[in-house]
Every structure is written in C-alpha cells, then in structure tokens.
Length: 115
Length: 111
Image 1 (cartoon, rainbow over the protein chains, first blue to last red):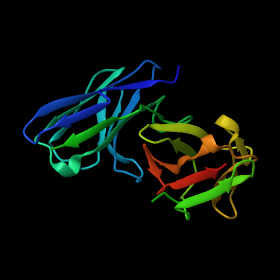
Image 2: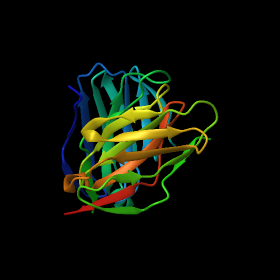
Image 3: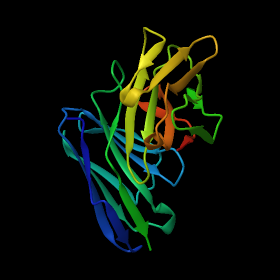
C-alpha cells in the first residue's frame, strides 16, 4: 500500500483562525515532508521530519508550525495566515533519507483558502 | 547545487503517437533523478527513477525514461500516448535530503 492520506481535502479559514492539517501514512516510512504548491508551479519544500525529528525548515514563517506526534502522523498547525498562503498543501513520505531508494509518495493535498 | 530544467511548458501530441517530455539536469556527483505526474487537484504520483544501472528505466503506466550522461538529460517517453496521459509532469533531482523539482511540463494528448 503506497497511500498517504491527508485531511481535510478543502479548508477555508480567516486570517485570525487557527486550524490544522493532518497527514498519515502506514508504509513504515521514517521521513515525512510538507510542501506548498501554487497553481501550475512545482511544489516548494517547507519542512522535513526524519525519525520524528524536524531536520529541515526551509525558512518558513512561524505562522506555520509542524508537528510529528509519531512515525505515522504529521500535522501542520496554521495560525494568523495571510491570503497569499492560499495554496495546495502536500504531504509526502519516503522510506528514509540520504541513501538508496528515495522516491517520495505524496498525498492528495489540502486545498487551503485564506480569506 | 543540483538542478533540473524542463525546457517546454507544454507538449501537444495526438493519441497513439509517441510522446517525449524533456528534462536536463545539472549535478555534482551521481544524479538521482525522478519523474512525477500530477493530475488536476491531485497530489504527485511517482512514475520512475534513475539511481544507477541501465540507462533505460521503465516505470508506471507504460512510461519509460532514458538517462543520457553525455547530454545530461533524462527524457520521459511513452511509445503510444493516451488521452488520459494529459497531466502536468515534473522532473526532479535529489539534493541531499530534498527533491528539487523542475518547473513542470503540461502534456496535452488530443483524440
């Protein structure tokens, strides 16, 4: 099973709201990723977790707060977002980082609209 | 730094004809190269990868890619295009713990 699930599929939030995106995989992958994707553009890496520890933060604003409660779950907490944060947020996972098979498996994404 | 380039924003092909989506790379060291496909409002789906070995890599849905070291290219190919292959295609290269994506090529297959 090469499935990564994400909830919710769609989210509309105001600039003062707090919300969370959730990602789950049961493939035994130990690396998990958050990406932001604008329309017709490639995904932009935001965060990387390896063995439940944050290993990469691509200078993402603090209004985005990632969390990895266990090896299967990845959350992205959102607070005080701006309209320009509206995008498709993709979660991905891979077997490991740094060597060997490195393909990432992506979830379907959460379409976020900030009003 | 590692990078990939996709020189064509869009490729148009008639159904049943062969298709090629181009990708060139710039890396230091051995390249780890990937192709992904994205259908509208969906996540990316992994198609194939080149790590080492045979220069012709076979992947999902009848796609294959040819690694050419002298031309630093990794073009995606399919012998006979289907209308359902219409989508956005991304080439990517591994850079330590990250994937670096190309700008994407929209493939349109006409009936």
